[in-house]
Image: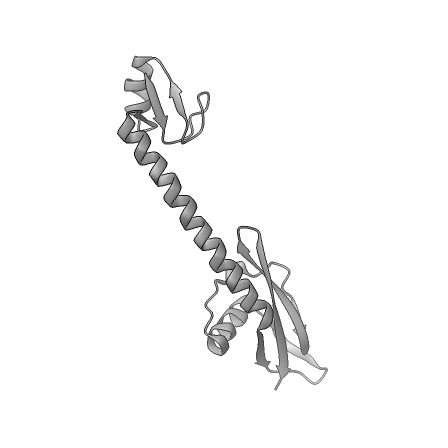
Length: 148
């Protein structure tokens, strides 16, 4: 019996593979537990179409992320923060502040999770902030911190 694996099965294979298994194992365990579907021509054609759709969607997402990275590389945001007598800021610039300033000043909405972990802006001046947008695409945003 041929089955199309829907989920990874430890000693059999990964999702998306077509495997030849014994009838009882295929019907009772794999199909019964939802790990596989019977590999008919309709199921295989539907799976191939789903893979094409997934690849097309991923290519569109990568193209939009590259466009966003180009925009972020060119943009600059200005953040105003209270400053002490010694020239240092009260607290530091947070990821939330950068994300909200980017949305206010340029209309670009980015999740704060895309900003790298090494964010530690505690002084007035110009800083570069790195964004990890996904699929190996990075962007650098220029942040200008102004004291009040």
